[in-house]
Length: 192
Image 1 (cartoon, one colour):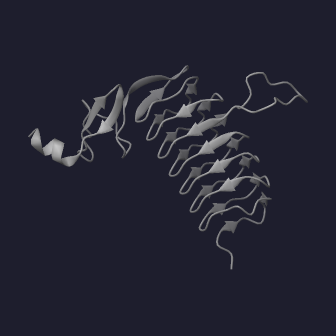
Image 2 (cartoon, helix red, strand yellow; image 1 turned 45 degrees about the vertical axis):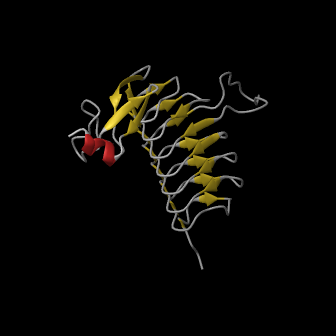
Image 3 (tube, helix red, strand yellow; image 1 turned 30 degrees about the vertical axis):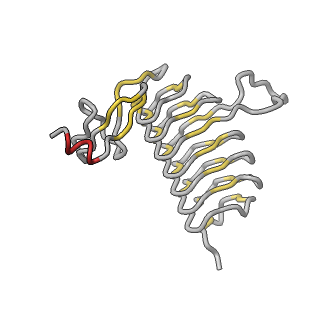
């Protein structure tokens, strides 16, 4: 019984694919790649060998996921996002080791963004379309531009925060040691 769906026009060489995942036409997935459950790998994608993709990940069309990428659960990668994994690329020369890039859980990367190799994109971070990301992105950060700069914070639901409060779902956040964290409900109620 097949637990995942592979379009007949896809070239999928790995069998490390989680239940409920769909891989669409003209996608190439190399033999050692690992893809979690309930993922949606859209058409015209390439996934190399040294790649681990978590559960519930969406990869839109036109994305190449090169060796060294680690994508955690519930990540969204928009169409034509570009990842790099080598600071000194040359034809017919491979580095001793490719740069490792980590996309933390629930992060979203907008269409046509470029992520330079060796970075970490924080949990729940939001990368604007067309951005060029050249440095690590903190958890919950909203970044965009070329080069990408932080322009605020986003809630776990994806809405930009207004004074550390989400106007969509009413979650409240606080800064602790330069890191954004959600206040627990008891703390929120005691401040009212």
